[in-house]
Length: 441
Image 1 (tube, rainbow, N blue to C red):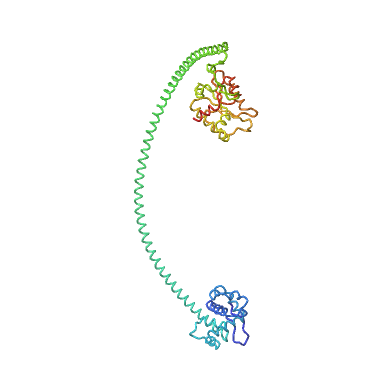
Image 2 (image 1 turned 135 degrees about the horizontal axis):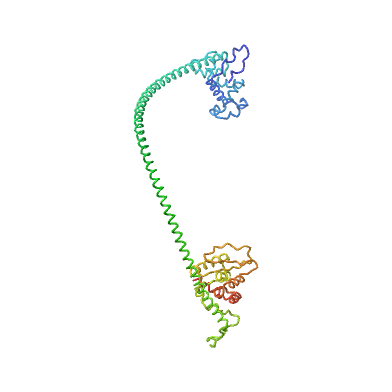
């Protein structure tokens, strides 16, 4: 806060030579804030109108700078604040106008009132208060310096005492270090003696090791000679064994050839006899002589493939079972999706392979598929999809025709055309429901 505008000449007033102390400034702001709360709105400076509705404490806290600036720059506002002081403390205002400062009044309050009232000689009153505050400040500073000096003396004494204790501690540590150094020197001498003994022992051990290496080298040389001799004998023994094996294999091959020739002769003779006799199939049976009603035409009759049980056919040695996949699955699980049908059938066929050891091939129609679907195929089960433009029936007939004559081949399908076709290739057809019954057991 500045000292205020210059007063007219001859009034006995002037400017302060020093800034207004902060304590006096705070009291000026407090007095102006109290007056601001009771002034009419028209009498309040424009800069202070936003703070006029605040509570006094909040106004002093938030608007201290604007209030001080208004008191300093607006004489009319300062006069209204001075009028408020005259009403509140008339004795103080009267004494200040007479040019004296009451001794019983707080100097700070008197200086703030003088600054606001601006009577003749007010600067002297404020300067006197400033001098008084500076003296008190100097006195307090001297007391603080004296206290600081006392504390520093105490700290110096404590530091000196600590230094004495540190010296004593260092002397004790030095004595301990000297004793430890003596011990370490003694230990070093003993260690050097042990190192010399260890070096001597190492030298003796090295000499013994050199002798042991020489003996080991000689032993290895002898063992190498023995190994070479044994390898030579082993090579001779292996040559003799190989010669014996070759002779034995030649004898066995000759015996196998004789036996195979005899077996082929017997098989050819049996086949020739079958062709030579050319026996016609049995067309009548004793049951045909019994009078009874025959079923209506168009009914499904049991074919030759239903005479022998499927279990018996699976027990034949080296039997190959060819399964018409969708024909069986649509007989067993017609309501399920095709993927589920395939999975169930392949899982069941895996069980049959594990029980009988038969060769099983399952054929699905893949003529309409771009690529065969992915399947989890059990061990021992062969899965085939017919290629584009080829039906599963054609693949099944090709598989049956590819088998050698005389091998037992079983084709599982209820398709009459497949049954007739594979029968001509020597395979035995079996209806799909026979396999379904076997799988559902």
